[in-house]
Length: 464
Image 1 (spheres, rainbow, N blue to C red):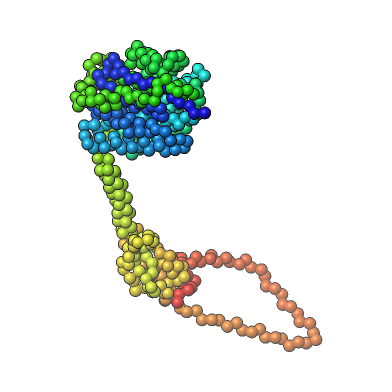
Image 2: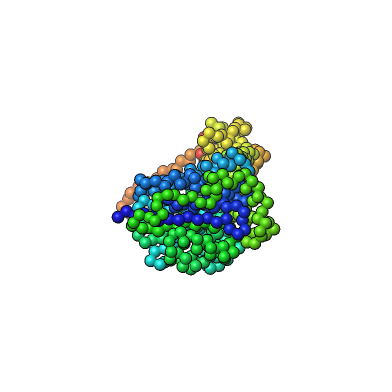
């Protein structure tokens, strides 16, 4: 069974603002809403550009999983278009727009969402929000720090965290949704849910045609004191031919710019502020400007990235230079061939980088050192500075000289015992001498010196 959409779209500038920054589109295969923002940076240009690009999806043949790819591609192309508009006119720097789109293939819906405009579905008398607000207040609700009721009156409920703004990280939420005959769909800008409760919205959507519902919803928002533009798109999922026919509807800033009724003076009026007062802002400040206040400008993005890269490379290079400079102030004693030598640097291996160099080659041969000292030198002996390294070498020379002065011990011969003649008489065993207490001799430690400062003879073992 193939279903169809019976739709209506309506946008109102509101009772405070002088220009409409909302844009909306409704067609047989696509429902789309964009809420522009940025104050003097031409929010109506942003929303209109987004709608003009994404509305090209309103055609048959995009079904199933292809809807996700099509929606993502269209949103990215709209984002690129906003970037181009900023490059063409720097006065537009900081402008942006929300995007909420429902792509319909006759059996299911594809949702693309970015910002704080909303998508709802009413089924069997129950209202359900399909989109998820990308706002600071919604993040507090998600974290459990405030309730939905508190979010409704929070002073920062309009602060957006993600939006279509020409930056490369403007990726929308994407989702496939089921649909059935009797469902009622609704898209709206934040001028409605920021002032009208979901209970009132559900009551207004429960009865009437799409045309009457959009009028009722906007009326409720205006009567509640909304100081923003209010835009709604309502569509019924039906099994018969839609009463609205198949003629697309374009409303808001997109329709005004297409007809040429909004000229260059619009941005100038917004820069002067909405003189009507009221709403959230004070002192003639446009509330829409505050929605983008925390966001950095996008201009010269490539230059900022290059600057960041240069800083990172500078930090890495500076740290590397500092580390290398530190190594070149270190010294150690090691071997250079058969001789003891002093090296400058550290005995570490880094591919492509030499961290040590021969500083002084000594006349002391490694083979003239005792085993313990030779093993120390071959494993390198670290020194605090050059003087300390030279003291180590002097100590090694003294050890080698003292070992060289030690007399070479001569091997001692043990006389063989004489064998007494064997006789027939027993040989008496001489009595054992009285027991004496042996005197213990303290062991010597290799490499240690005797009490008079000389090297123990046993420590010179291994001298070649």
